[in-house]
Image (cartoon, rainbow, N blue to C red; front, side, top):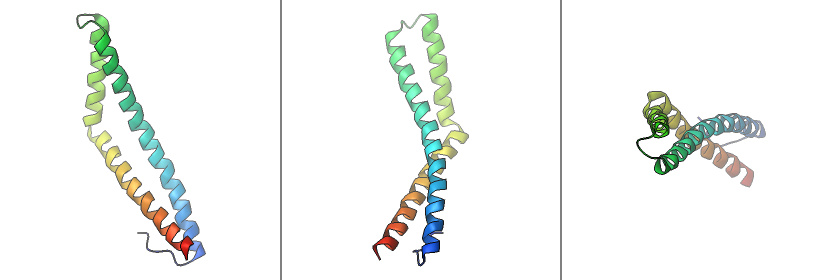
Length: 102
């Protein structure tokens, strides 16, 4: 999809594609990072609340719901997309860098 660059126009197109793909990658990472941070917060809170309390039950429900979200096909698709985008971004960056060295 992104062969070695042979002209300044192609370089510009690659840079534009990079910017667009980077925005999507950052969106995906922010979503996944937010979910992981919330899970970590809930786990820490669960460790500090008595297990027989209503607060513990509420925290455990949210924690289990978020764990289910992480196992969902939608989340797994986002995870795969982020990995694919990461590889694509590295490749585009390498092609631009190789062109700039010439």
